[in-house]
Image (cartoon, rainbow, N blue to C red; front, side, top):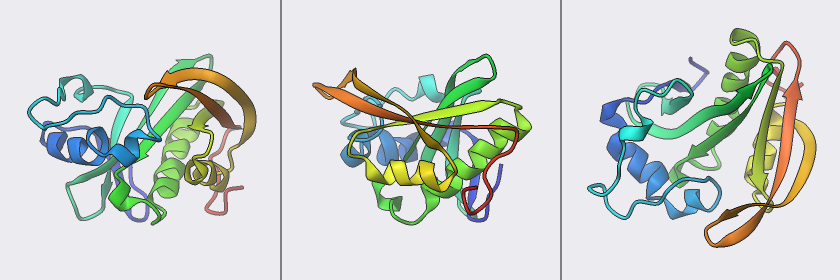
Length: 171
């Protein structure tokens, strides 16, 4: 899959170091994206990420380096949930919005799902903006839905339904 600045494709064995640096070892990312922290590259078990049909890398065009990931899960009855994480060095540049837009197009138009959900921890306004820019709307609030990093976390869910992904204006 491609967008204006990004390539979204399968995770490769050669992505281990970039995945470690951008996701599993980036403490800023781990505050907003549920993932197991790894202290060193040597202790990082990458094997579970390879060969998955639901997990994709986010790469800048012209680069083979992974800058983030995007995935879908809980696919059932024509719907699913998505999650995404970008290395904190790539925040604030619109990459998340662009990746989610292209991924929604894939799920809704190419894969034929009817509804796509996403959630964010209360306080993660950047993720909320990504969802809203892509036409996703508030669905529900979940108090103490998950325990993560030693705290009960509140989630806000957004969703988009229909046979087409949002256009560039999020409509």
